[in-house]
Length: 228
Image (cartoon, rainbow, N blue to C red; front, side, top):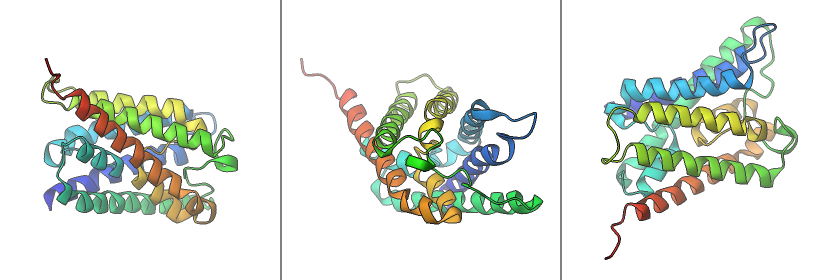
């Protein structure tokens, strides 16, 4: 139960801080933080919660990470569903709080930082570009996570490396899909937007999970002793 609560809190903070920065601060007149600020917000959210509760739950905060760690032989299958439920609930709770705040000055929620492709991509990128981007970004994210949390890696720097990697991922992919690499983050925003966001949600659930599974399998192979 404590591990599930830690995942709930970590995912809540990731969605609240990351999507909140996009909704409230990115385009603020005269002082907007822009793409760079949003990318840093997502990275800092993961970094801070990795050190805050990572020692309790492992600090996944993302269904794709949970499944990727399982594929890499680093997480038990019986815990996958409880973790994913906790992550999705945490993301939905964060989106609910953001909805209340955004509506607080009479504004409409607009796209609500939802992920999209085609006309709903920030840069107008199509579905193929979105699939490739989400797959590659999630694949590399999991390679980094599996590597820096390996028992052979330097102790104490995992949270920093993971947070910086998520920042880098957002710097590259915000213009393409608004950056998902996290099905829970995509689900939470799509629920409030409805319409097109729900219709396109399949991509931001299936593709990150596929990328994560591939990364888990590749890293497991990399750690297999070579035959002499």
